Length: 178
Image (cartoon, rainbow, N blue to C red; front, side, top):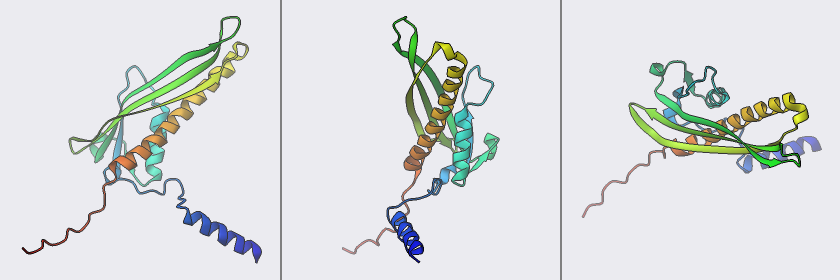
């Protein structure tokens, strides 16, 4: 009996604080049917952020279209820049720590107009480097870049939800007679 009471108390506490499962937030109407367009030069593979965005949109109930003509809106990734910079060197003058920075610029277009003008997000992460384990560190860097793009996708979704949610229509009161 006490377990049941404890579970009910926890459930009541969690629901009272506004907790929602991920993906439980409403999706802006403009994103119900969307195509993800990536403007990328000299790349043959789709960047990880696209798969993350596709997954996040579908989890929130969107239909992610394979062709732009089938979608009501286009989420356009205008630029995706990734940079690596040395932030510390060892006594031998070799790099021992790097900073990775990923920046994304995007916009949302629908019905031939820009619904959300140019937006930009950026993330930076540091990681240590060991010249004795080059292959392992390269794999670590790749995983870190993928994780950063997944995080950027989630940040994009939060910003899209906040920027594109339209307030519900409020009835206007009838005019008062003079």
